[in-house]
Length: 122
Image (cartoon, rainbow, N blue to C red; front, side, top):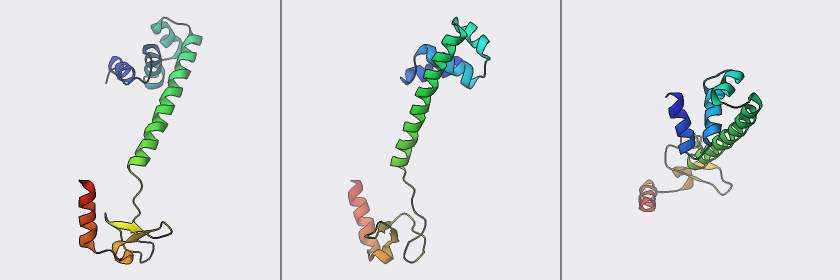
């Protein structure tokens, strides 16, 4: 992706202003020296520093938000049953204390578990 495309992506996503996106791409992505980036943008190095700081903060917050959403959407699936130690696979439950248990230890009929999963998906 070229720098113009990268700048457009950041602006179109509503993340950064044009100037912030340009400063971010020039300095943080392409590694253009401070003086050269400021000259290219037609601004002073101090203005570049301030603009870049705001851009980096917005990008940092966006990354933290994206990571939080990913954790919420894809929680870690436990690997083993806390009671018998067998692998859990895709169908498992939790005991009264919240520990992961396999459907055998939970006393769940596999046919019912599959049926309940199918019904909840519709």
